Every structure is written in structure tokens, then in C-alpha cells.
Amino acid sequence: MSVRYLQSPIGMLRLTAKEGKLCEVALTDAAGAEEPDPATDRAAAQLMEYFNGKRKEFTLEASPQGTPFQLAVWRKLVQIPFGKVVTYGELARAIGRPTACRAVANAVGRNPLLIVTPCHRVVASNGLGGFTGGISVKKALLRLEQVENSGKSAFSEKFFFTFPANRDTI
View (cartoon, rainbow, N blue to C red):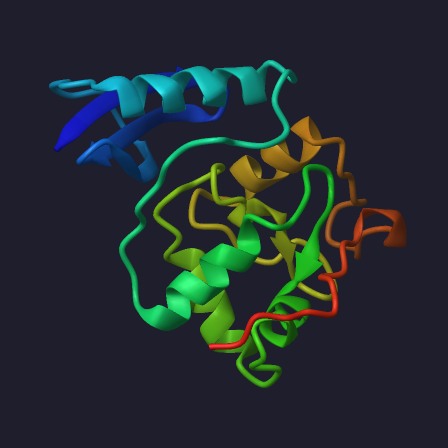
């Protein structure tokens, strides 16, 4: 297992890779012992490009660990474009489970690849919704992507993304 720490505009990030594939990007309180490898170095470089406004998509080999349901949700998250948001309900419909909004929200909250798998782009139908890293971090990431809302109110329609009709199902 390789680990690298990255000081970012939203705080300290721990990047973890296993067998050359990124398996975690997480906020942490402080840096620890590092054993970087090419996978964590690539992730650090691409994350800094994202924070500097030079990257809108990540091209990293990743291997998140989760249940089949969580993996289905996370596969859909990476389809949400930079600068767009979807609701938990739309995400549930996109995986073929329209009544599973709460389960989808739980899977989004367990996303192990913060930013790279853009869970910050999922919002409640009436506003921001939650975020594992805290609402201030979610707001900062959406602001970086120029997605704005007025406090607790809903987002403008121009920011919403609709998944293509060929929806994945579990």
C-alpha cells in the first residue's frame, strides 16, 4: 500500500494506492508517514491541476472498494460533468433504483475517492444536501467549478445534469 499526503485548498488530503491503482482520496487532519508511488504522484498532480482550474476530468486508474450497489452509484458519479450537479433522486433513477434515494445518499457518503469521484456534485432537491467533508468543503468545490446557489435555496436549472437514457442498472 502506498500513501502520499497533499496540502490542498480544502485541507490535507491522504492519497492511497494499492497495486498501482488509487483506492482512496480522503481529508485528514495531518500528514503522516509517506510511501508514494507513481499512482499517488499522478493523483496529486491531477488534483493540483483541478484546484488550479486546469483540469475538469481525472484520468487515473482507480480501484475503490465497496458493495455492488455502492460501485454502481460511484460509476454514475464519475459521469457528472465538471460544473454540473444532480439530485440524489436523479442519481437513484440513473442506476435503475428510483425509490432508493436514501441508500444512494449513503453510498455517496461512503465514496472513498473524494473529488476524483465527484460526490460533491450531488445535491438535495431543495439545496446543498450533506457532504462527508463538511458543507464548507462542498461549497468550496462547487464554487471552484463555478456552480453557485444562494445559501440554502435550490440551484439554477443551468447547473443540472441529466444522465443519458441508457441508464445502468444494478
